Structures are given as structure tokens and as C-alpha cells.
Amino acid sequence: MKLLLIHAARFEFQARQKAVEEAEEADECSMQGAADNALVCFTTVESVDERSLAWVVSRAAEEIEGLAKRLGVQSLVVYPYAHLSPELAPPRAAIRALKSLEAELANRGFRVLRAPFGWYKRFTISCVGHPLAELSRTIRPAETAEEEFAVMTPEGEIIPISRFDLSSAPWGFQQLVKKEVFNEAGAGGEPRYLDYCRKFGIEWEQSSDLGHMRYGPEATIIMDLLAEYAWRCATSLGFPVFRVKGTNMFDLSVPAVKQHADLFGDRLYTLEVGSKRLILRYAACHQQFAMIKDWNISYRHLPFGVFEVADSYRLEQPGELTLCFRLRRFLMPDLHILARNLEEAKGLSLKVHEKIYEEVRNVGRDYVSIYNLTRSFLEENLEYVKKLVSMEGKPVLLHFVPEGKYYWVINVEYNIIDQLGRPREIGTFQIDVGNAQRFGITYTDESGAKKYPVIIHTAIIGSLERYLYMLFDTAAGEEARGGKPSLPFWLSPVQVRIVPVSAEYVNKAVEIAEYLNAHGFRADVDDREESLAKRVREAEVKWIPFIVVIGAREVGKNTLSVRRRGGGAEEKSLEEFLSELEREGGSYPKMPLSLPLQVSKRPEYF
Image (cartoon, rainbow, N blue to C red):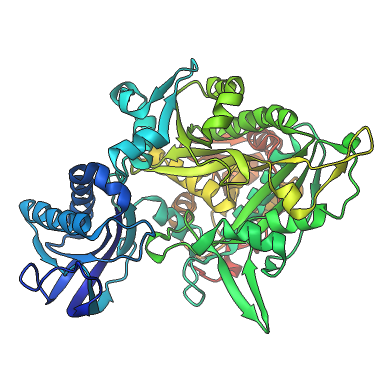
């Protein structure tokens, strides 16, 4: 069953004429109606639902009830809508399901208005317009879940989902299975990270299309640092990596572009320029593959990687857009690794897998994973899959996909469980056996023959926005435990805020800030005519890791009064403080301060 759920300020409909012979009669339900402040449930009953119709209806009612309670609405509209799936149930089964859904929701205490099945209808809707106002849900029959999913334990045992004891699994894995297999949403609520986004100047761009973000001066420093860090992650894997750049617009009349784009269906961003129909790319694939096909590659060159932070576009549903997480335009640090054959690709993917886990654990988090793969790939590469799972040390969800449908043979999705208990995909890798031939990418083997390489796709830290989302969500967890939320030191837009006690000490503060900036640390001076307490407090509010106060005592003793975020104040020499900053920064990227050194010279930009 497919559901499109719209929170409507007002909804009206009127049945006009029968669309199918098996349409409901006028005495079976309302031929016209209206509802205010209602959740409108556009409902498609699918052929597969007949296997477990009562179960599907019950699960759909739970989903609708949960959202209605979050919205605070009591009025529901069940509206038959045949346009959400090509695989429709027979009319008799669909009518039975819709009537059952109406009754189930009424039994749960809602006022329910049901439109007739099988009629052409006129309707008007006024959507309220907020993050939960437009959502979609898919309800799978229990038998379908049994066919599509299984669990692999760290010991390599494969257990059908119906026989797996979910209650004994780690909490995060339980949440993943509930969402992916049974379509159960998390607890809901307003995520704390949205306040953090505003703090750093990250927000929607209202004058663009939906789902496009903008970044203020401090957020821009963060994003530039993340791009550099993603590059360093890519080059740490032990083989050559080439950094490239290209366009984000491709012509659908090119067969390879069209074939690859068809896999993304209605998520394509398309536009027309003259007689051409173009797409905006959804990752670096198009540009990198179009470039690599022109390279003269020998087996001696393999393996190697190609990397770009790709300006990427996906036409996500309006109701599912989420700041920093689900976007229509985002930055994907895409790495494609070319290997001689599948065996070499499997070995390389183990390194990728290990690196992805290293990065998430570096920020104090862990993943729960979905392995999308065919049954034949699992059977033929069982020991390889077991090795991947054993490296995780916990169960993974196996999702079986149809044979030959995708260009990849395995696609691993790495999810955190966020502050609200929701699985959120961050990192990924897949082994691609189709695109080299599609795009004409070849290498010359030892015998002089032309061969198609196997390609690993990966974004080790995920899109830049999703990685930042994970860091903010981690900070929200720290705050919930009573700690002080923060970004990693290397990623803080301003790492040191120097606060002179009075105007008399501004020049000394600037001198110290310039010294620290010359050594690669982003230091500024709050020289505004505000009280010392207010300036220190505002530095804390901005999560600045170190605050240095300069006054008569410090100048007289040639020392610094250094306050670490979340800790107390210490007296240090400038050289001691610099050594502490070097230890804190480690081997992470450094980037100059791209703001005026003195805070008084900056406008209030958020």
C-alpha cells in the first residue's frame, strides 16, 4: 500500500462520473465532502497487498494515527488514488481495503471521511506547509518483507527476518529494521540540530527552488574544511587518486547518460535549453565517467581513484526535505575506484569499509548497515560478505534486490541513529559492474586486450551536509547528557576568540591573534564596546573552543588567561598555548580565517 499524506487546512471533493465498471455505488460512501484541518490520505492499494490485507490495513492505520497525533488533527480523509503505483490491486480487493482502513481509523477515535473508489473526482486542497505537511509511506505485506530481507550476524549466520529475535539485537539495529522492513517512523519531534544550523548561518535559500541551502561566512569555512577533509580521506586508502572538476549538466540524448539517468526515475532534475533536454547530475558519476573514457589506461595503472566534490541535484519530495540532510542540491565528495576485476574490487572495498567505520568512530558514533544485494551475489561471494559483516561486529540487514535490475552487485548503506531515534544514511559504497561498458571505459590488460574495469563508488564521509548533520546530531546528544555541545576543534570556524578587557589592550590582542593565524589557527578579536562578561558569554554561545582574555595582569606577566570550552581557565605562555593548539588540531586540515580579524568590523549576518 502506498500513502501520500497531506496536512490540509481545507480539502473538498466531489465525485463526477464512474471511471471503472467496478466503482462503488453512491449509497456505499460519500459522493462529496469537505474537511478542515485534516490529514488527507491519498491511498493506493497494490496487488501485493492481497497476501496480507488485514495486516497491511492495520499497519497503514498505525502510520496514519501516528502522524495525525503529531499534527494534532482529528479529521482524516481516505482518498482512493491509483497514481502512486503501477501494480494495482483488483477493484474488489481495493474497496475492501479502503473500507477496512476507514473502519480501523474510526475505531481509533478519528472523524473519517472516505471518498468513493472508481470515480473521476474534482478536488481542491490547501496544504498547510510545514516539515510534516507532505509525507509518503509504503506499507509492505509481512510475506513481502520475508522475501526481501534477512539478517546476517557477525558470526556469518543468515536468519530470515521473520525468525530473527529483534528484541535481542542492539537498539540501533532494532530502529533500522523497524524503519526499513516495517516502515515504522521514529518518535518524531523537533530535532535540536536545527538550532545549531541557525547558529552557524545555515538555512534554506527562500529565493531558490525548494531544498536549496545557503551558507553564511562561518558555515562556508566549515564546508570548505569538510571538502578538504574528504579529499584527505580519499587519498589515505593506499592507491593513486586524481582530483578533477567538471560540469553538473548533461544531455539526455547521449545514450550512456540517458541509460544511467533512467535508474533515478522521478528524482531527476531536468531542464530544457533550446531543443536539448538536460539533467543536473545527482553525483559525480556522469562527469567522471565521461572524462575517464578518454584516458589511455593500462593494467599497470590500476587500481586508481578519481575524486570530486560534486555539485549534485536530486528532486526529493517537498514534504521530505530536511535541512542539512535531505536536499535537492548538495555537495557529494564522490570517489570512484577503478579495479581490474571483481576480485580486486572486493579487496579494495574492504579497505573502503574499514575507512568508513574509522571515520564514524573518530567522532564517537557508530553505524548500522543495510547491504543491498542480489541473492546470487550473496551465494557466490558468501565469504566476502561474511568478512564485511565480521568487521562491523554486529548484525547487518540484508536487502535482496531483483537480479539484473541495477548496475551494481552490492550497495552498502551506513546509517546512524539520530537524536530522535531515526536511521539516517551517511556513508556508502557500491561495486559497479555495468557503467564501464555503458560509458565506454576500458583498460588494456597484460595480453593487449581491452577490458572493462569494475568501479567502486563511495562517499567515505557521506555528503558534506550529511556529515555535518551527523556532527550536529552528536552535539545534540552531548547536550542532552548535560554536556556542552561543540564541533570538533579543527572544524570550528573560529578556534580562538581573544577578548581584551578594554580598548587599551586591543592592539595586544590583535598582535596575538595575528601570531596564531600565522601558525594556521583561526583566531579573532572581540573588540566591541560591550562588557567583558557579555563578550565571553557570546563566545561560549558560538561554541568557540578557546577564549583568551587579555588585560593588565596578563600583559604585565606576559601570559594568557585561556578558557577551554567546557573547562576552567588556565594561565599559559603564548608558546605553551600554541603547542596546545597544535596537539588539538593534530593532522586535520587547516584553513585561514576568512572573516575580518576584529569582530567590530563584521555586520550581524544572522
